[in-house]
Image 1: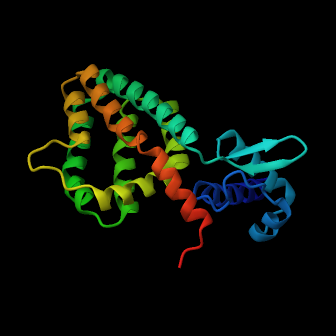
Image 2 (image 1 turned 90 degrees about the vertical axis):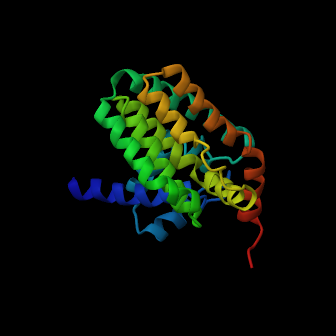
Length: 230
């Protein structure tokens, strides 16, 4: 039994990574026979893993047709951003009530230690890792495991587009004006002052600013997925 569970976990992790990075094209039908050979997995653990990814929103299932990769449209990405706003703002509201001063101080220290690296990072993947770490630590202060689990799933499903958006921002945007507070700093100031409304407003503005760029990011994503690169 333990060996079977381990095999399902191995197949699930491999498939989850593939789905998150659009190794399958948007709306592409999953060829289970080919996938079974590629992953060295039998039908049972493969099906269990595929069904789990359907439940998590990475894949879809159609009766009599099988499993498909999720769609990639501006509406889909905007929907994810809207859910992210709801999850993070609610977590922030709870954090203003529940977080210990020492926990807020620790997160402030993390931001202080990483923000300069974030601003100057040449690798968008490294920037995204630091950003996700900050937001996950922030949600964790709410003490709500389900909100934390929801944000982790959202991050995984939106990561491909966020990387494209960060690359585009790096090429287009100038550095922040010296002395200007970052969005993360404004959020933490609200949290430290137990100002739930102010913190939520800063969080909402921070996330929705990137939501507005979803259409262009999706267009770039399609060009990368379907147009052969030199």
